Image 1: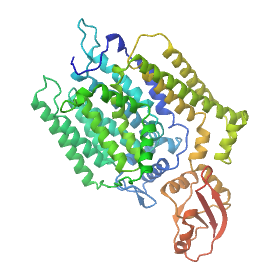
Image 2 (image 1 turned 90 degrees about the horizontal axis):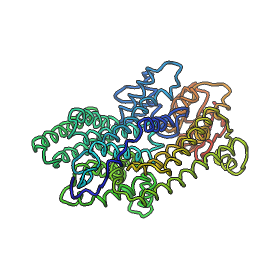
Image 3 (image 1 turned 120 degrees about the horizontal axis):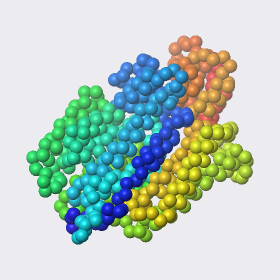
Length: 562
Protein backbone atom coordinates (compact mmCIF):
# COMPACT_ATOMS: atom_id res chain seq x y z
CA UNK A 1 0.00 0.00 0.00
CA UNK A 2 2.80 2.40 0.91
CA UNK A 3 6.54 2.15 1.18
CA UNK A 4 6.51 3.70 4.65
CA UNK A 5 4.25 1.04 6.15
CA UNK A 6 6.16 -1.54 8.20
CA UNK A 7 3.12 -3.84 8.37
CA UNK A 8 3.50 -7.02 6.35
CA UNK A 9 0.33 -9.01 7.03
CA UNK A 10 -1.18 -11.88 5.11
CA UNK A 11 -4.92 -12.47 4.94
CA UNK A 12 -4.53 -15.60 7.05
CA UNK A 13 -3.23 -13.46 9.96
CA UNK A 14 -6.36 -11.33 10.31
CA UNK A 15 -8.78 -14.01 11.39
CA UNK A 16 -11.71 -12.61 13.30
CA UNK A 17 -11.66 -13.05 17.05
CA UNK A 18 -14.89 -14.95 17.94
CA UNK A 19 -17.51 -12.35 18.83
CA UNK A 20 -19.10 -14.47 21.54
CA UNK A 21 -15.80 -14.89 23.37
CA UNK A 22 -14.98 -11.18 23.09
CA UNK A 23 -18.42 -10.09 24.32
CA UNK A 24 -18.31 -12.54 27.24
CA UNK A 25 -14.88 -11.25 28.24
CA UNK A 26 -16.12 -7.66 28.17
CA UNK A 27 -19.31 -8.54 30.06
CA UNK A 28 -17.39 -10.36 32.79
CA UNK A 29 -14.97 -7.45 33.11
CA UNK A 30 -17.76 -4.87 33.33
CA UNK A 31 -19.93 -6.76 35.81
CA UNK A 32 -17.11 -7.72 38.17
CA UNK A 33 -16.65 -4.82 40.52
CA UNK A 34 -20.11 -3.34 40.12
CA UNK A 35 -22.10 -6.21 41.63
CA UNK A 36 -22.16 -7.10 45.31
CA UNK A 37 -19.77 -4.57 46.81
CA UNK A 38 -20.28 -1.67 49.20
CA UNK A 39 -19.49 1.92 48.18
CA UNK A 40 -15.75 2.28 48.63
CA UNK A 41 -13.92 4.93 50.60
CA UNK A 42 -13.15 8.05 48.60
CA UNK A 43 -14.71 9.27 45.38
CA UNK A 44 -16.98 6.23 45.07
CA UNK A 45 -19.04 6.84 48.22
CA UNK A 46 -18.78 10.63 47.88
CA UNK A 47 -20.36 10.62 44.42
CA UNK A 48 -23.00 8.20 45.69
CA UNK A 49 -23.88 10.70 48.44
CA UNK A 50 -24.50 13.47 45.90
CA UNK A 51 -26.68 11.17 43.82
CA UNK A 52 -28.80 10.24 46.81
CA UNK A 53 -29.41 13.90 47.67
CA UNK A 54 -30.42 14.71 44.09
CA UNK A 55 -32.80 11.76 43.93
CA UNK A 56 -34.33 12.75 47.28
CA UNK A 57 -34.93 16.30 46.08
CA UNK A 58 -32.79 17.90 48.79
CA UNK A 59 -30.29 19.34 46.32
CA UNK A 60 -30.60 21.51 43.21
CA UNK A 61 -29.86 19.72 39.94
CA UNK A 62 -27.72 22.55 38.59
CA UNK A 63 -25.67 22.77 41.78
CA UNK A 64 -25.50 19.37 43.53
CA UNK A 65 -24.63 19.52 47.21
CA UNK A 66 -24.01 17.06 50.03
CA UNK A 67 -25.15 18.57 53.32
CA UNK A 68 -24.53 21.96 51.78
CA UNK A 69 -21.09 21.12 50.36
CA UNK A 70 -21.05 21.65 46.56
CA UNK A 71 -19.34 19.52 43.95
CA UNK A 72 -18.24 22.34 41.69
CA UNK A 73 -18.21 21.74 37.95
CA UNK A 74 -19.55 18.15 37.96
CA UNK A 75 -23.15 17.64 36.84
CA UNK A 76 -23.78 14.80 34.41
CA UNK A 77 -22.45 11.84 36.49
CA UNK A 78 -24.67 12.92 39.39
CA UNK A 79 -27.65 13.37 37.10
CA UNK A 80 -27.27 9.90 35.62
CA UNK A 81 -26.92 8.18 38.99
CA UNK A 82 -29.76 10.13 40.57
CA UNK A 83 -32.01 9.39 37.60
CA UNK A 84 -31.26 5.67 37.82
CA UNK A 85 -31.92 5.75 41.57
CA UNK A 86 -35.24 7.56 41.10
CA UNK A 87 -36.41 5.07 38.45
CA UNK A 88 -35.23 1.92 40.25
CA UNK A 89 -37.83 -0.20 42.12
CA UNK A 90 -37.79 0.02 45.90
CA UNK A 91 -36.36 -3.50 46.26
CA UNK A 92 -33.18 -2.62 44.34
CA UNK A 93 -30.19 -1.70 46.50
CA UNK A 94 -29.57 2.06 46.01
CA UNK A 95 -25.80 1.48 45.83
CA UNK A 96 -26.36 -0.89 42.89
CA UNK A 97 -28.98 1.26 41.17
CA UNK A 98 -26.61 4.22 40.79
CA UNK A 99 -24.02 1.92 39.21
CA UNK A 100 -26.19 1.04 36.23
CA UNK A 101 -25.21 4.19 34.29
CA UNK A 102 -21.59 3.49 35.24
CA UNK A 103 -21.81 0.06 33.65
CA UNK A 104 -23.16 1.64 30.47
CA UNK A 105 -20.37 4.23 30.46
CA UNK A 106 -17.69 1.55 30.82
CA UNK A 107 -19.28 -0.42 28.00
CA UNK A 108 -19.32 2.78 25.89
CA UNK A 109 -15.59 3.20 26.58
CA UNK A 110 -14.84 -0.35 25.44
CA UNK A 111 -17.03 -0.14 22.34
CA UNK A 112 -15.71 3.31 21.39
CA UNK A 113 -12.13 2.06 21.66
CA UNK A 114 -12.88 -0.86 19.35
CA UNK A 115 -14.56 1.31 16.71
CA UNK A 116 -11.97 4.07 17.09
CA UNK A 117 -9.10 1.67 16.38
CA UNK A 118 -11.10 0.11 13.53
CA UNK A 119 -11.51 3.40 11.69
CA UNK A 120 -7.93 4.48 12.34
CA UNK A 121 -6.76 1.20 10.81
CA UNK A 122 -9.00 1.79 7.79
CA UNK A 123 -6.86 4.78 6.80
CA UNK A 124 -5.08 4.08 3.48
CA UNK A 125 -1.56 4.66 4.84
CA UNK A 126 -2.26 2.48 7.88
CA UNK A 127 -2.78 -0.55 5.66
CA UNK A 128 -0.14 -3.29 5.27
CA UNK A 129 2.21 -3.54 2.33
CA UNK A 130 0.67 -4.98 -0.84
CA UNK A 131 2.22 -8.28 -1.95
CA UNK A 132 3.54 -8.67 -5.46
CA UNK A 133 1.20 -11.59 -6.22
CA UNK A 134 -1.64 -10.72 -3.86
CA UNK A 135 -2.63 -12.37 -0.59
CA UNK A 136 -2.13 -9.36 1.69
CA UNK A 137 -4.79 -8.67 4.32
CA UNK A 138 -7.97 -7.07 3.06
CA UNK A 139 -8.54 -3.54 4.48
CA UNK A 140 -11.67 -4.28 6.49
CA UNK A 141 -10.38 -7.59 7.85
CA UNK A 142 -7.07 -5.97 8.79
CA UNK A 143 -8.87 -3.09 10.54
CA UNK A 144 -11.13 -5.51 12.41
CA UNK A 145 -8.17 -7.56 13.63
CA UNK A 146 -6.37 -4.43 14.86
CA UNK A 147 -9.58 -3.28 16.58
CA UNK A 148 -9.78 -6.62 18.39
CA UNK A 149 -6.17 -6.15 19.46
CA UNK A 150 -6.83 -2.57 20.61
CA UNK A 151 -9.75 -3.65 22.78
CA UNK A 152 -7.70 -6.48 24.29
CA UNK A 153 -4.89 -3.99 24.97
CA UNK A 154 -7.29 -1.70 26.82
CA UNK A 155 -8.63 -4.57 28.93
CA UNK A 156 -5.06 -5.61 29.75
CA UNK A 157 -4.16 -2.22 31.29
CA UNK A 158 -3.67 -2.66 35.03
CA UNK A 159 -4.80 0.88 35.80
CA UNK A 160 -8.19 0.42 34.17
CA UNK A 161 -9.57 -2.11 36.66
CA UNK A 162 -10.26 -0.16 39.85
CA UNK A 163 -11.01 3.35 38.57
CA UNK A 164 -13.30 2.12 35.79
CA UNK A 165 -15.47 0.35 38.37
CA UNK A 166 -15.97 3.31 40.69
CA UNK A 167 -19.12 5.40 40.63
CA UNK A 168 -17.19 8.62 40.14
CA UNK A 169 -16.75 11.44 37.62
CA UNK A 170 -13.53 9.77 36.43
CA UNK A 171 -15.48 6.89 34.88
CA UNK A 172 -17.86 9.28 33.14
CA UNK A 173 -14.88 11.20 31.79
CA UNK A 174 -13.37 7.94 30.51
CA UNK A 175 -16.55 7.03 28.66
CA UNK A 176 -16.93 10.45 27.03
CA UNK A 177 -13.21 10.74 26.21
CA UNK A 178 -13.39 7.38 24.42
CA UNK A 179 -16.54 8.53 22.60
CA UNK A 180 -14.70 11.67 21.45
CA UNK A 181 -11.79 9.50 20.32
CA UNK A 182 -14.13 7.40 18.20
CA UNK A 183 -15.75 10.51 16.74
CA UNK A 184 -12.46 11.95 15.48
CA UNK A 185 -11.24 8.57 14.22
CA UNK A 186 -14.42 7.81 12.26
CA UNK A 187 -15.00 11.29 10.80
CA UNK A 188 -13.58 10.52 7.30
CA UNK A 189 -15.80 7.43 7.02
CA UNK A 190 -19.03 8.16 8.94
CA UNK A 191 -19.51 11.90 9.05
CA UNK A 192 -22.96 12.04 10.68
CA UNK A 193 -22.34 9.36 13.29
CA UNK A 194 -18.85 10.69 14.03
CA UNK A 195 -20.02 14.27 14.58
CA UNK A 196 -22.84 13.05 16.83
CA UNK A 197 -20.39 10.98 18.87
CA UNK A 198 -17.92 13.86 19.06
CA UNK A 199 -20.65 16.26 20.19
CA UNK A 200 -21.83 13.88 22.90
CA UNK A 201 -18.27 13.10 23.97
CA UNK A 202 -17.03 16.68 24.30
CA UNK A 203 -20.25 17.87 25.95
CA UNK A 204 -20.15 14.92 28.33
CA UNK A 205 -16.56 15.73 29.28
CA UNK A 206 -17.50 19.34 30.00
CA UNK A 207 -20.49 18.31 32.12
CA UNK A 208 -18.39 15.72 33.98
CA UNK A 209 -15.81 18.14 35.32
CA UNK A 210 -13.33 18.32 32.41
CA UNK A 211 -14.31 21.29 30.19
CA UNK A 212 -10.66 22.26 29.63
CA UNK A 213 -9.85 18.74 28.40
CA UNK A 214 -12.86 18.84 26.07
CA UNK A 215 -11.76 22.20 24.68
CA UNK A 216 -8.18 21.11 24.03
CA UNK A 217 -9.26 17.83 22.43
CA UNK A 218 -11.72 19.67 20.20
CA UNK A 219 -9.29 22.39 19.10
CA UNK A 220 -6.59 19.82 18.35
CA UNK A 221 -9.13 17.65 16.58
CA UNK A 222 -10.08 20.52 14.29
CA UNK A 223 -6.43 20.89 13.31
CA UNK A 224 -6.07 17.14 12.74
CA UNK A 225 -9.01 17.22 10.34
CA UNK A 226 -6.92 19.35 7.98
CA UNK A 227 -4.26 16.65 7.62
CA UNK A 228 -4.35 14.86 4.23
CA UNK A 229 -6.24 11.59 4.41
CA UNK A 230 -5.82 10.09 0.96
CA UNK A 231 -5.37 11.30 -2.60
CA UNK A 232 -9.12 11.19 -3.26
CA UNK A 233 -10.14 13.44 -0.36
CA UNK A 234 -10.99 16.94 -1.56
CA UNK A 235 -9.43 19.77 0.47
CA UNK A 236 -12.88 21.33 0.78
CA UNK A 237 -14.18 18.26 2.58
CA UNK A 238 -11.30 18.40 5.04
CA UNK A 239 -12.02 22.06 5.76
CA UNK A 240 -15.71 21.30 6.34
CA UNK A 241 -14.80 18.60 8.83
CA UNK A 242 -12.46 20.98 10.63
CA UNK A 243 -15.15 23.67 10.70
CA UNK A 244 -17.73 21.28 12.15
CA UNK A 245 -15.33 20.15 14.88
CA UNK A 246 -14.49 23.78 15.69
CA UNK A 247 -18.18 24.72 15.90
CA UNK A 248 -18.85 21.77 18.24
CA UNK A 249 -15.91 22.80 20.43
CA UNK A 250 -17.08 26.41 20.64
CA UNK A 251 -20.59 25.22 21.53
CA UNK A 252 -19.11 23.10 24.35
CA UNK A 253 -17.14 26.12 25.58
CA UNK A 254 -20.34 28.18 25.58
CA UNK A 255 -22.17 25.43 27.48
CA UNK A 256 -19.45 25.22 30.11
CA UNK A 257 -19.46 29.00 30.51
CA UNK A 258 -23.24 29.20 30.76
CA UNK A 259 -23.34 26.54 33.50
CA UNK A 260 -20.25 27.92 35.25
CA UNK A 261 -18.32 24.66 34.89
CA UNK A 262 -14.81 26.09 34.61
CA UNK A 263 -12.64 25.11 37.54
CA UNK A 264 -8.86 25.50 37.42
CA UNK A 265 -6.96 23.07 39.60
CA UNK A 266 -3.49 23.34 38.11
CA UNK A 267 -0.59 22.29 40.31
CA UNK A 268 2.82 21.97 38.72
CA UNK A 269 4.77 19.00 40.10
CA UNK A 270 7.46 19.88 42.58
CA UNK A 271 10.97 20.12 41.23
CA UNK A 272 12.08 17.15 43.29
CA UNK A 273 13.43 13.84 42.08
CA UNK A 274 11.07 11.92 44.39
CA UNK A 275 8.01 13.59 42.85
CA UNK A 276 9.03 12.82 39.29
CA UNK A 277 10.02 9.30 40.29
CA UNK A 278 6.54 8.71 41.76
CA UNK A 279 4.91 10.00 38.59
CA UNK A 280 7.15 7.74 36.52
CA UNK A 281 6.29 4.69 38.59
CA UNK A 282 2.59 5.50 38.31
CA UNK A 283 2.86 5.78 34.55
CA UNK A 284 4.77 2.51 34.23
CA UNK A 285 2.44 0.28 36.26
CA UNK A 286 -0.82 2.06 35.41
CA UNK A 287 -0.37 1.60 31.66
CA UNK A 288 1.31 -1.82 31.79
CA UNK A 289 1.57 -3.83 29.52
CA UNK A 290 0.54 -1.34 26.83
CA UNK A 291 3.25 1.31 27.09
CA UNK A 292 6.11 -0.89 25.74
CA UNK A 293 3.93 -1.76 22.75
CA UNK A 294 3.10 1.91 22.16
CA UNK A 295 6.81 2.77 22.17
CA UNK A 296 7.43 -0.06 19.72
CA UNK A 297 4.74 1.39 17.46
CA UNK A 298 6.40 4.80 17.49
CA UNK A 299 9.71 3.20 16.52
CA UNK A 300 8.47 0.88 13.77
CA UNK A 301 6.16 3.50 12.22
CA UNK A 302 8.64 6.35 12.72
CA UNK A 303 8.82 7.10 9.00
CA UNK A 304 5.18 8.16 9.07
CA UNK A 305 5.84 10.34 12.13
CA UNK A 306 8.96 12.14 10.95
CA UNK A 307 8.07 13.18 7.41
CA UNK A 308 6.91 16.71 8.25
CA UNK A 309 3.54 15.96 9.80
CA UNK A 310 2.17 12.72 11.24
CA UNK A 311 -0.40 10.64 9.47
CA UNK A 312 -3.94 11.11 10.69
CA UNK A 313 -4.20 7.61 12.18
CA UNK A 314 -1.35 8.50 14.52
CA UNK A 315 -2.17 12.17 15.02
CA UNK A 316 -5.50 11.38 16.72
CA UNK A 317 -4.19 9.06 19.48
CA UNK A 318 -1.01 11.11 19.93
CA UNK A 319 -2.98 14.32 20.48
CA UNK A 320 -5.21 12.60 23.03
CA UNK A 321 -2.13 11.28 24.82
CA UNK A 322 -0.40 14.66 24.75
CA UNK A 323 -3.39 16.42 26.33
CA UNK A 324 -4.12 13.75 28.93
CA UNK A 325 -0.52 13.05 29.92
CA UNK A 326 -0.13 16.78 30.37
CA UNK A 327 -3.20 16.73 32.58
CA UNK A 328 -1.66 13.96 34.65
CA UNK A 329 1.33 16.22 35.30
CA UNK A 330 -0.47 19.46 36.19
CA UNK A 331 -3.96 18.45 37.35
CA UNK A 332 -3.88 15.92 40.22
CA UNK A 333 -4.91 13.25 40.96
CA UNK A 334 -2.65 11.94 38.22
CA UNK A 335 -4.12 8.44 38.02
CA UNK A 336 -7.55 9.75 37.08
CA UNK A 337 -6.06 11.88 34.32
CA UNK A 338 -4.07 8.91 33.03
CA UNK A 339 -7.26 6.85 32.94
CA UNK A 340 -8.65 9.00 30.12
CA UNK A 341 -5.58 8.36 27.98
CA UNK A 342 -5.83 4.56 28.04
CA UNK A 343 -8.05 4.22 24.90
CA UNK A 344 -5.57 6.26 22.84
CA UNK A 345 -2.62 4.34 24.29
CA UNK A 346 -4.38 1.06 23.44
CA UNK A 347 -4.84 2.30 19.87
CA UNK A 348 -1.12 2.96 19.54
CA UNK A 349 -0.37 -0.45 21.00
CA UNK A 350 -2.62 -2.10 18.42
CA UNK A 351 -0.44 -0.82 15.58
CA UNK A 352 2.50 -2.69 17.07
CA UNK A 353 0.79 -6.03 16.47
CA UNK A 354 1.41 -6.33 12.70
CA UNK A 355 5.11 -5.55 13.22
CA UNK A 356 5.82 -8.06 16.00
CA UNK A 357 8.25 -10.87 15.42
CA UNK A 358 7.49 -14.31 16.76
CA UNK A 359 10.11 -14.01 19.52
CA UNK A 360 8.52 -10.80 20.86
CA UNK A 361 5.06 -12.40 20.94
CA UNK A 362 6.47 -15.44 22.75
CA UNK A 363 8.12 -13.19 25.35
CA UNK A 364 4.80 -11.45 26.04
CA UNK A 365 3.04 -14.80 26.33
CA UNK A 366 5.48 -16.33 28.80
CA UNK A 367 5.75 -13.24 30.96
CA UNK A 368 1.97 -12.87 31.05
CA UNK A 369 1.46 -16.55 31.80
CA UNK A 370 3.85 -16.49 34.76
CA UNK A 371 2.67 -13.13 36.15
CA UNK A 372 -1.09 -13.64 36.04
CA UNK A 373 -0.97 -17.32 36.97
CA UNK A 374 1.07 -16.36 40.04
CA UNK A 375 -1.42 -13.65 40.94
CA UNK A 376 -4.37 -16.01 40.54
CA UNK A 377 -2.68 -18.71 42.64
CA UNK A 378 -1.94 -16.13 45.34
CA UNK A 379 -5.58 -15.05 45.50
CA UNK A 380 -6.73 -18.68 45.74
CA UNK A 381 -4.16 -19.48 48.47
CA UNK A 382 -5.24 -16.49 50.56
CA UNK A 383 -8.90 -17.44 50.17
CA UNK A 384 -8.26 -21.08 51.12
CA UNK A 385 -6.24 -19.92 54.11
CA UNK A 386 -9.08 -17.69 55.28
CA UNK A 387 -11.62 -20.49 54.89
CA UNK A 388 -9.61 -23.39 56.34
CA UNK A 389 -6.69 -21.89 58.25
CA UNK A 390 -4.20 -23.82 56.09
CA UNK A 391 -1.70 -22.45 55.37
CA UNK A 392 -1.88 -20.20 58.41
CA UNK A 393 0.42 -17.34 57.37
CA UNK A 394 -1.76 -15.73 54.63
CA UNK A 395 -4.81 -15.59 56.89
CA UNK A 396 -2.72 -14.17 59.73
CA UNK A 397 -1.50 -11.40 57.45
CA UNK A 398 -5.06 -10.54 56.44
CA UNK A 399 -6.23 -10.44 60.05
CA UNK A 400 -3.28 -8.22 60.93
CA UNK A 401 -4.14 -5.74 58.18
CA UNK A 402 -7.92 -5.92 58.78
CA UNK A 403 -8.51 -6.49 62.51
CA UNK A 404 -11.90 -7.92 63.29
CA UNK A 405 -12.52 -9.36 59.83
CA UNK A 406 -14.54 -12.57 59.83
CA UNK A 407 -14.31 -14.71 56.67
CA UNK A 408 -17.55 -15.76 55.01
CA UNK A 409 -18.16 -18.47 52.43
CA UNK A 410 -20.25 -17.66 49.37
CA UNK A 411 -21.10 -20.60 47.14
CA UNK A 412 -22.01 -18.48 44.07
CA UNK A 413 -18.74 -16.53 44.36
CA UNK A 414 -16.76 -19.77 44.74
CA UNK A 415 -18.39 -21.34 41.68
CA UNK A 416 -17.89 -18.23 39.54
CA UNK A 417 -14.24 -18.05 40.56
CA UNK A 418 -13.83 -21.73 39.76
CA UNK A 419 -15.34 -21.25 36.30
CA UNK A 420 -13.11 -18.21 35.63
CA UNK A 421 -10.02 -20.17 36.63
CA UNK A 422 -11.05 -23.04 34.38
CA UNK A 423 -11.48 -20.64 31.47
CA UNK A 424 -7.96 -19.30 32.11
CA UNK A 425 -6.50 -22.81 32.03
CA UNK A 426 -8.33 -23.49 28.77
CA UNK A 427 -7.12 -20.17 27.35
CA UNK A 428 -3.51 -20.97 28.18
CA UNK A 429 -3.80 -24.40 26.56
CA UNK A 430 -5.35 -22.82 23.47
CA UNK A 431 -2.62 -20.17 23.26
CA UNK A 432 0.27 -22.62 23.44
CA UNK A 433 -1.39 -24.96 20.96
CA UNK A 434 -0.83 -24.97 17.23
CA UNK A 435 -3.33 -22.63 15.61
CA UNK A 436 -3.29 -20.41 12.54
CA UNK A 437 -1.53 -17.13 13.26
CA UNK A 438 -3.62 -14.08 14.16
CA UNK A 439 -2.09 -10.71 14.94
CA UNK A 440 -4.24 -10.25 18.06
CA UNK A 441 -3.11 -13.55 19.64
CA UNK A 442 -0.27 -11.99 21.64
CA UNK A 443 -2.78 -9.88 23.59
CA UNK A 444 -5.18 -12.67 24.47
CA UNK A 445 -3.28 -13.76 27.58
CA UNK A 446 -2.64 -10.21 28.92
CA UNK A 447 -6.32 -9.29 28.59
CA UNK A 448 -7.52 -12.65 29.88
CA UNK A 449 -5.07 -12.59 32.80
CA UNK A 450 -6.08 -9.08 33.89
CA UNK A 451 -9.76 -10.01 33.66
CA UNK A 452 -9.14 -13.24 35.61
CA UNK A 453 -7.34 -11.55 38.51
CA UNK A 454 -9.90 -8.75 38.69
CA UNK A 455 -12.73 -11.30 38.62
CA UNK A 456 -11.14 -13.35 41.41
CA UNK A 457 -10.67 -10.24 43.54
CA UNK A 458 -14.33 -9.31 43.04
CA UNK A 459 -15.57 -12.80 43.97
CA UNK A 460 -13.19 -14.54 46.37
CA UNK A 461 -11.72 -11.31 47.72
CA UNK A 462 -14.92 -9.25 47.84
CA UNK A 463 -15.71 -9.74 51.56
CA UNK A 464 -12.19 -8.67 52.49
CA UNK A 465 -12.39 -5.71 50.12
CA UNK A 466 -15.73 -4.56 51.56
CA UNK A 467 -14.33 -4.78 55.06
CA UNK A 468 -11.07 -2.99 54.31
CA UNK A 469 -12.16 -0.37 51.75
CA UNK A 470 -15.67 0.64 52.84
CA UNK A 471 -16.99 2.63 55.78
CA UNK A 472 -19.62 0.02 56.71
CA UNK A 473 -17.50 -1.63 59.47
CA UNK A 474 -16.72 1.76 61.04
CA UNK A 475 -20.39 2.76 61.03
CA UNK A 476 -21.39 -0.54 62.66
CA UNK A 477 -18.73 -0.13 65.37
CA UNK A 478 -20.00 3.37 66.14
CA UNK A 479 -23.63 2.20 66.27
CA UNK A 480 -22.74 -0.44 68.87
CA UNK A 481 -22.12 2.38 71.37
CA UNK A 482 -25.31 4.30 70.52
CA UNK A 483 -27.89 2.70 72.79
CA UNK A 484 -30.42 5.48 72.22
CA UNK A 485 -30.38 6.48 68.55
CA UNK A 486 -31.14 10.05 67.62
CA UNK A 487 -29.76 12.85 65.50
CA UNK A 488 -25.99 13.13 65.42
CA UNK A 489 -23.91 16.28 65.27
CA UNK A 490 -20.67 15.95 63.33
CA UNK A 491 -17.41 17.87 63.30
CA UNK A 492 -14.41 17.45 61.01
CA UNK A 493 -16.11 14.98 58.64
CA UNK A 494 -15.11 14.59 55.01
CA UNK A 495 -17.77 14.35 52.33
CA UNK A 496 -17.08 10.62 51.98
CA UNK A 497 -17.66 10.09 55.71
CA UNK A 498 -20.89 12.10 55.60
CA UNK A 499 -22.22 10.00 52.72
CA UNK A 500 -21.18 6.74 54.40
CA UNK A 501 -22.75 7.45 57.79
CA UNK A 502 -25.98 8.59 56.17
CA UNK A 503 -26.18 5.50 53.95
CA UNK A 504 -24.85 2.71 56.16
CA UNK A 505 -26.16 4.09 59.45
CA UNK A 506 -29.30 5.90 58.27
CA UNK A 507 -28.24 8.70 60.62
CA UNK A 508 -29.73 12.17 60.77
CA UNK A 509 -26.49 14.17 60.59
CA UNK A 510 -26.17 17.83 61.47
CA UNK A 511 -23.15 20.08 61.61
CA UNK A 512 -21.98 20.83 65.13
CA UNK A 513 -22.28 24.46 66.25
CA UNK A 514 -22.29 26.50 69.42
CA UNK A 515 -26.05 27.04 69.12
CA UNK A 516 -28.50 25.10 71.35
CA UNK A 517 -29.40 21.68 69.92
CA UNK A 518 -31.31 18.63 71.09
CA UNK A 519 -29.03 16.07 69.37
CA UNK A 520 -27.89 13.51 71.95
CA UNK A 521 -24.74 12.50 70.06
CA UNK A 522 -21.64 14.15 68.67
CA UNK A 523 -19.14 12.51 66.31
CA UNK A 524 -15.75 14.13 65.86
CA UNK A 525 -12.96 13.07 63.54
CA UNK A 526 -9.81 12.67 65.57
CA UNK A 527 -7.90 15.11 63.35
CA UNK A 528 -10.40 17.86 64.23
CA UNK A 529 -10.50 17.35 67.99
CA UNK A 530 -8.28 20.37 68.58
CA UNK A 531 -10.90 22.69 67.04
CA UNK A 532 -13.93 21.08 68.70
CA UNK A 533 -14.18 23.57 71.56
CA UNK A 534 -14.21 26.48 69.12
CA UNK A 535 -17.08 24.83 67.22
CA UNK A 536 -19.39 23.43 69.91
CA UNK A 537 -18.60 25.97 72.63
CA UNK A 538 -18.83 24.94 76.24
CA UNK A 539 -21.81 22.60 75.96
CA UNK A 540 -21.33 19.49 78.11
CA UNK A 541 -20.27 16.36 76.24
CA UNK A 542 -19.08 13.05 77.65
CA UNK A 543 -16.71 10.87 75.65
CA UNK A 544 -18.31 7.46 75.10
CA UNK A 545 -15.84 5.72 72.80
CA UNK A 546 -12.98 6.16 70.37
CA UNK A 547 -13.63 4.01 67.32
CA UNK A 548 -11.02 3.23 64.68
CA UNK A 549 -11.89 2.21 61.15
CA UNK A 550 -10.53 -1.30 60.58
CA UNK A 551 -7.56 -1.47 58.22
CA UNK A 552 -6.80 2.23 58.73
CA UNK A 553 -4.79 3.32 61.76
CA UNK A 554 -5.15 7.01 60.88
CA UNK A 555 -8.94 7.28 60.85
CA UNK A 556 -10.49 7.45 64.34
CA UNK A 557 -13.93 8.68 65.35
CA UNK A 558 -14.66 10.08 68.80
CA UNK A 559 -18.25 9.54 69.96
CA UNK A 560 -19.65 11.90 72.59
CA UNK A 561 -22.97 11.79 74.44
CA UNK A 562 -24.69 14.92 75.67
